[in-house]
Length: 101
Length: 515
View (cartoon, rainbow over the protein chains, first blue to last red):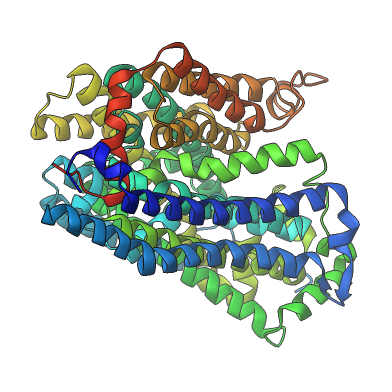
């Protein structure tokens, strides 16, 4: 592997890194977008659904709203966990191989 | 409790005491920060020495404004479930920051998001365009904060609106001018801790009355005000409106200059990631607390008392504090609300001053040739000017309906800043002309469309019908900005930018420039 930037970005290791990072980011973003826009479209088209009661003091909308909040946080957690575990080691491997050459 | 009369608006000894301690403590920190702040890296980015966890708290501090504490609690207390829908919208932008921009911002920029956009493009035109987007976002956000804070302080402490505005301006200028990013970050961290602790204690005191079971609290609200408080109301009705606002909130968060700037205070991409995780957790937790505080106020204070005090319900959390913990606890929560205002305004002013000095003065006016001392001096002059402008704007807009300005700030951030940022990171062909087209189109569409939208054209200018049907323009202005970026890049290619793309990509992913 040479130190020419064009050669680096065309190397299989770097391409694999970019592809993995991009697929993880894209999948997590799509989940967040899908869940949030799904939530507001349900609100816009079928108000009754989220307003129906599960028990006294608990409408369907409350646990769902709580779920969206926890999901947003959970997804950032998934990304941090993946990046610390997999992404950083791949980045370090490429950096080391660059240093050796 | 039937004849509950509040002491809000009268001088409160506890409140003044707590507030005095907060001001003294933070000015003390500013004094020490001033001794450590010598270089541009210190002033703009606290020398890159903030840890991921600390930055997470500071990000949460920047985002949890008095409007989100008092405003959302009030909205919940008067409209129930709709308040939760509103706060969810403000949270979902954070994962997007994490997945798309946190690491590239840290790896490619130095002090502002314009550093990233201009990384391989022609400096002058791109910096000028990006500065306009940044400054407009900061100014609209700042007007909303200043006007809100003047009115709030007037209501809570009985202080005159003008005195409140000048006082907020003066203290905030002290933090930023002398302590730079280091002092601003610590003010933000302290404020975030106080706000989270205050809100948690308030929730525990409410829950103690309901056997620590939130469902019992909601059931009490339902018994008092009917099923409608637990069901969605009128907040989301037109799906296109909902989608447009959703886009502004989701992608606008990623384009807020004072949020973007925080990623330069941490040493590397790993710390940047951690800070988004921490911030999202605290902000989400805070929104859950405000939901319970709102219902607590609805049941324990009552909607008549809350709306009698302030039509928008902004006093709900304070009234609840007084009902559950007496005037001492009210004093504490009021002081926390004041501290919140100061910290948010300081963060915005620093972001604006950085744009003026780093992007406009150094990289445009001086073509990148200013030395450290000169740049710090200009940054300090910019802070002073912007602080004065903030005070003047606060005075000019007294009594005006400025609630739409937060929505507008998010719309500009999503339309002017976010598309240019994403395209410059991801698209090799993105050219200088494309960047300028994208930012100018996004800003212009966002401003023009909001003026002719129901929010301004009907509600403020009192016209019978709106020319543009959506309340928030992001759906059109953000798509327009992406399209304009593409058109501009197709009209005029930028070969130098394309040849630098490989180097940018390496640095984006590996975090180091490879020589």
